Image 1 (cartoon, rainbow, N blue to C red):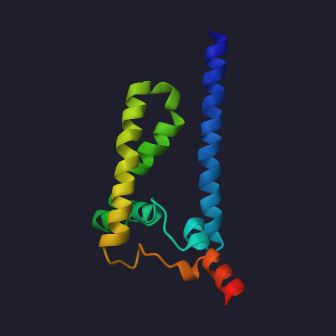
Image 2 (image 1 turned 90 degrees about the vertical axis):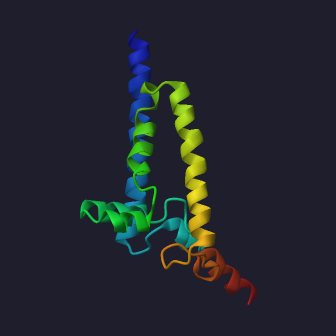
Image 3 (image 1 turned 135 degrees about the vertical axis):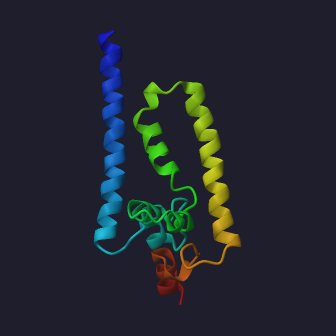
Amino acid sequence: MKSKVKNFCSSQKKNIQVVLAIILFYTFFHIIGIGCPILFVTGIPCLACGMTRAWGAVLQFHFQDAISYHPLFFLGPLIVSAILFENRIAPKIRRCFWLITIPLLFAVYFYRLFYITSDLIYIDLKNGMIGKLYMLIFY
């Protein structure tokens, strides 16, 4: 019994460390003015593009703005909870959650990227670091 508790605590601690590392990583990039490191490097926004702005809007009770920044903003806390408490969630429920959440994120991502004209979500390969390096080397 003690080894089960010890394994659970070890796994829980690792998940907390991963979540905190991701938060610190993104916070660092926002502080130095880069914003999203994925967009900065590739010129292509990530699946979660707009989530930070959406939660900023939620904290100011601007829910319509939050939806415009990212319509699935409410999934953020659910995803973090699913990661942090994965050992406490039944495997079938956990699998079902991810089988719904991941395709939903991709569907909304591609819809926003290719079907909605927006200043928030756009592909800008020339201004990503990879595009800039390519231009520097080949032109």
